[in-house]
Amino acid sequence: MSKTQERVDTAQNGVPQQGRVAGPVAPPRVSARRRRPGVIALSLALIAAGGAGAAVLLLQVGDRTQVVTVVRDVQVGEVLTERDLGKASVALDPAVKAVRADEMGMVVGKRAAVELKPGSLLAPSQVTGDSLVKAGEQLVPIGLKPEQVPATALVPGQNVQLVEVPAPGATDTGKASETPPRTIAGRVVKASKAAPGTGLVVVDVATSADEGPTAAAWVSAGTLRLVLDAPGGS
Image (cartoon, rainbow, N blue to C red; front, top):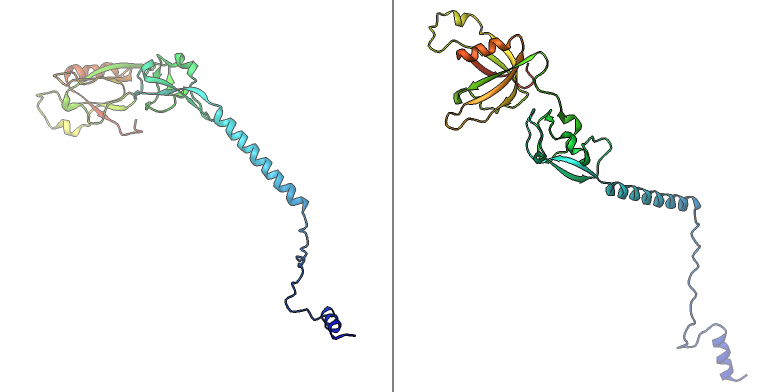
């Protein structure tokens, strides 16, 4: 065998020739991840539930109702007019009771049972067709001078006490300080604005029919004063 053939055989039997390019290397085999049918089913269920929840939310947002709103301050006992009310389209929760827009005519002309504030929805329980003067009561008008008007605004529904005081110019015999003044419980039905020039305020007070004449007599004699009860008082 020639030396040339011997060198070729040696290279082919394990000793690579210098400069010889190696062939392509196959990538390592990676075992496929085992699929878990339970996890896949759970994922699909969650996706479906999320889609259903979004659909319900969209339906609720889109389901709007025309309702009556309050656009001006209304005191207790005041008669509602169309100028006091407005309309709005809202997504109304079933638990919220509100007057529907097509029922506005049914509340106009009724009285406010509570104080109404602008921007609020009008509920059926906030209006009443009843008079603020109840059966067995009388209405006594009382004129108050500027110095007799409380700094706290008089509004319908406030509880007051009508107090008998000594007549102007009466001589104090000392007995007045020993005897508690007579009082009559009442409730404000309406209070006028201060009259221009005099500042006189007229307050309509509801009292029991038995005590109404007495209160009127105190007013005539100038011996009546009006005292506000604390909130919640009688």
